[in-house]
Amino acid sequence: MQPKTASLSSSTHTTLTSLFVSPTQVLKGEAILLQAGNAIARLGERPLVVGGQQTLKVISPHLDPIFKKFKLQSAQAPYTPDCSESSLEALETALKQHQGDFIIGVGGGKALDTAKLLAHQHQLPIITIPTSAATCAAWTALSNIYSDEGAFQYDVPLVKCPDLVILDYEIVKKAPKRTLVAGIGDAIAKWYEASVSSGTSTATLTIAAVQQARVLRDLLFQKSVAALETPGGEEWREVVDACVLLAGVIGGLGGANCRTVAAHAVHNGLTHIPAAHGTLHGEKVAYGILVQLRLEEMIQGNQLAVSSRQQLLKFYEQIGLPKTLEGLGLSKATLAELRQAAEITCQPKSDIHRLPFAVSPDQLLAAMVSTTV
Ligand SMILES: [Zn+2]
Image 1: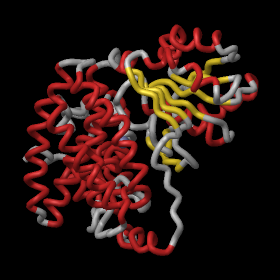
Image 2: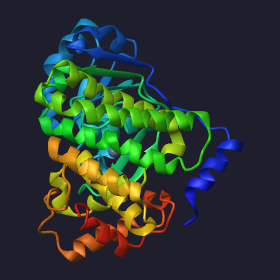
Image 3: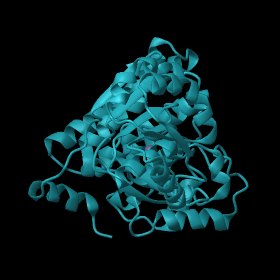
Image 4: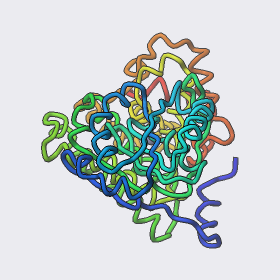
């Protein structure tokens, strides 16, 4: 595998890069969805609402009065079984049957990724309504595709960020606490990954993105405990903004120079173990950060990685992020399963190779079982 950081940073000098920094409009606030009618109705007349079965039921009382008031003809379609190619095919049929002219995605990362990709494929406007702060999917111009069984397959860069993001604290407040914990794990990964994948880039926007990622991490170190203690409180809102909005800004600003590295690659590998499906994206990513630091420590002799990892272990303990395979519910995973996950993580196209050194499946396995040493 070629050293991607070098080729990426040199390519920025010669190629014109499209930037997708931000959605066209973001509405955020308590019960803000109630006031979003005009902004929604501007995008079309026949929305197709995409989400999980349960979420679609829960969101109906919020959306139906808006549809009625603005005379919008809506239909609903679930994304089952996953954010997968077969779900997208079924949604395409639903979209055609309804003759939908814009998409509203409601739910967590996978629901929003599916809705965004459906809109992208049909060049339709897209609204995202996150129901938790577990990821920054509501914001980003990227969708991850999984198999029907939930194993990560590939990601699809989209041509734009959503047309409208509606971050309604009233709705997000009702999500399980664990989703915010996971969102914090996914958001802090931005620093550990962007600071590596940006390499020695001196590009203005790359430096800006990496520094924002550091600010994001520090903000989460300071405010997460208080936020989790008081859902709906001031710190809670700030942490939700950090996980959903600021994390999205960093992805947009950094673009191809601030991609994911080993933390997300480890996540992607773990999704191939069925027992790992009980944990959330951000929980696996958080564990992946520890693995990444352990690799930097073991292979590169990086002493800074040692102190970073110790700092994170304390933070994870405070807020309840998993530190080990056991913490991810994988104490009963077989060596064969773990080895397969490690091999998938080390496949040639994997983002783990954005690390400035080569990693073998054996080295990765050794790091995976020693995150707390
Ligand atoms: Zn992520």
